[in-house]
View 1 (cartoon, rainbow, N blue to C red):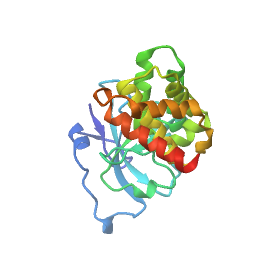
View 2: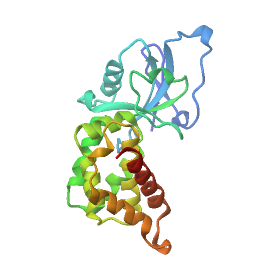
View 3: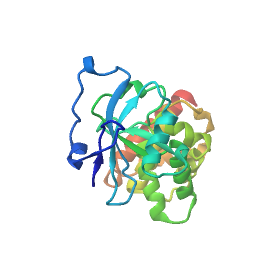
Amino acid sequence: MALKSLKGDRSSTVSTTALARTLPITPKKNQDDNIKKVAVTMPDLNTSEQQGQLIEFDQTMSLEAIIKDICQKWSLTEPKNYALRFNETNQKMYITESNRNNIRDGQVLNLTPSAGQTARQIQQALSGSRLEDKNTALRQLSFLASDFTFAMEFIRIEAHRLIIDIVQGGNFKGDPLAYTLKSFVCLMDHAIISWEILDVDFIKKVADCVSVSSSNLDPSCLQSALAILESVVLHW
């Protein structure tokens, strides 16, 4: 895999090892404060020929224009269906106009499906009949639900109701249930919707996660279930 670097028209080739380490930082005295030199990769592009890009992220340009530029270099159509995300151990959020100023020189960013696109994909998987697809979607949801941008899109299409239905159905145990409860806690933590949307059946199912015998108790389920019940008491 090759990597495009900046030179003149912002394109040439460097080793892929550049993606595995922090990029060199240009001294501020030689660099416009509005320009951040970053790498962009696309993890979801399933090809060994993928080329990462080194770009000058211009803070004076709209995100829409920057993403359109990146998509053109990879011959990707429909740039509106893509978004940039941070790619650090403790920072995987979607990049928005409100947090783009957190981008630093030398960071590696990911080009991924947009929050809206991803929310619809997860909704489709959870609405389908394939158990494997549902489990994969729940795992992905548990990772993304803490991101406000994603949560807004997920709730906007009312996909959170699928999570409520899954809990009330009582058909998931172990990791899938843990993913489901964790996702619900994260979605509700954004305070986008009221706890009053819940009914007694949902609360009873969550309470069951707390009352099961200790030998069968999943710690992750317990933690999320307790958080839900506590919030119900406070807000319901």
